Length: 201
Length: 348
Image 1 (cartoon, chains in turn green, purple):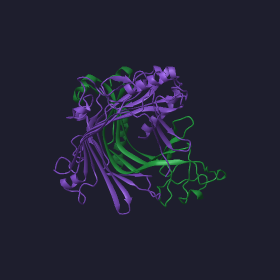
Image 2: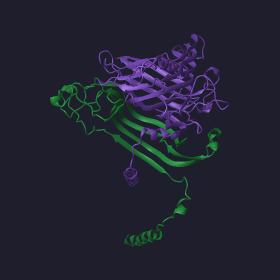
Image 3: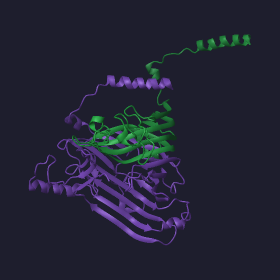
Image 4: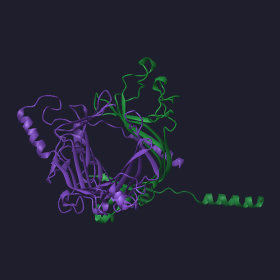
């Protein structure tokens, strides 16, 4: 056993010594065209356990929440739910706000690719006329959603306020938000194909 | 992989420091013309049949949530036979791709129903435009609906570059009762659709123009789940189907020069979509002379895009495979322009 180990060690050293990296000069580098790219696999989790703004209260009754508590469970649910990310946009100087609220969930995907590609043929005859490089985003074949959620609504203030509490308690009775709809997605969605991006003129 | 991420993060952090952003004034912005990104979709296929999707926050009179469950959601090449044979499709030709771009008001053109390209947006304004494949006039134009000349031959997408799309909504109306709306669309294209957004200085708000063109060889609306009780055979499915063949919608909201579409949320948190009266008052509220109002009205009636809704043939209880049912023939609303519209949400 000791002998074998002794034999292997010099071999390992020998190979590392031989494979010295050589810097490529600019001229050599410029000959590489459209090879390689980026291959991404990953999992993205947004506010799965709630965000930093609000703690999850013990009940769904807003009047019992403290100033830093908010529940975002569905209408009629008895179990309080964590709240997701909130994005609010105002389209008029003194108007109200469009809100994307409660954005949360896990998105995982395998094989999102990014590379450049020359198109000069195909596409029903359009490719030969087109004849230029494009940026190619290869969509992953599958995206897995887990409890992905968002709500679209409108409100009279950008930030969420608890209208069931008085101002002294940290709430704001004048706050008004109307949720138009919300979407919840769970499971695997098949998304295949390439998005080809190029300058428009 | 971690190394790659940290490289990416590094790049993201370094770039903003080097590329200091400078605000552009209106004059400079108006000089930006037709610059943006174009994108074509190659071999696209979307199939969400394995995932469960719910639309919530829609309540009944008692304030209870009425969840809408979404099934059989797909986008694929034509010939999918209502989603049973999904094949990838190319959307947006390289010569006429989807675009997200900045344009000058003078340079964005819209195809009027009589085939003339006109400017609909105000002068000297930088406009953000999201547009679908452009329409093509002349010999290069493709039939917007194959075999239905009334829809015109000024689309750019060819027959193989059209979409089959479908979605099924299950409305859980009450305990033990579920209403179904099953939609399947054949040979769908949306050429010539756009959304243009810009800031209106006098109104201090975001305004825009939207045009939604939908061309479809066929749209089937069915009220049951295929394969379920009383919904298995062709005859049973036909009995529960409303079929719209050779259908197109050109829905025009807003005419930038005199009647921009106003997106707004009131200060008490309700959304408002408004198409103001084009002639009565200037954007800043000042009155106009009769001659001015006449000139604006003339321009509006000549150039403002009009709304058309045309159903080549409407049938119920007959999907073309089996006999019977009712044929309602051709139904259309053509050349409609909206003089004033104000829609607002209300809390029930």
